[in-house]
Length: 145
Image (tube, rainbow, N blue to C red; front, side):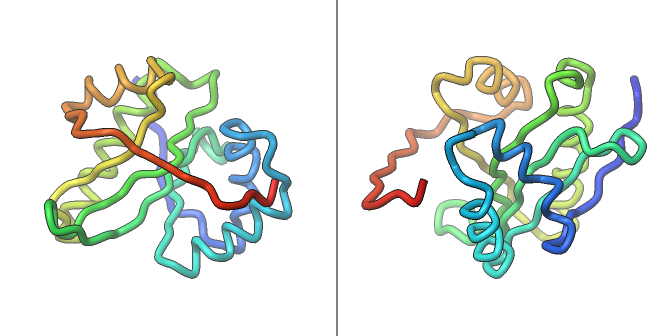
């Protein structure tokens, strides 16, 4: 299995993560994504980059949060691996890194949301011994897109 490297991408380097966000939702303009990244980074957001040599092949947003039912934990957000690298062990290595990072930061665990229509994602997370605990609901008041 190929070894990949993992390092955090700071706000100054974050233009390289925009194409990954656009894979999730191409309707959001780049200027809106940049505005949102400013706010996200100002509010405890970290972006883990997954690299093959110097090539960015995936990202995983990470928030350190506190909730009554789990305590201090990582919230994983917008996990995206380039299509050419899926099913090559990248996700498994990423989760080993994240679990180690969570433990080093005294977290009780991690959680995430996965779209219900993302069957490969649901299968991946289930294979990582994650348990489906509920539904994610959303109501938008306005859109900037």
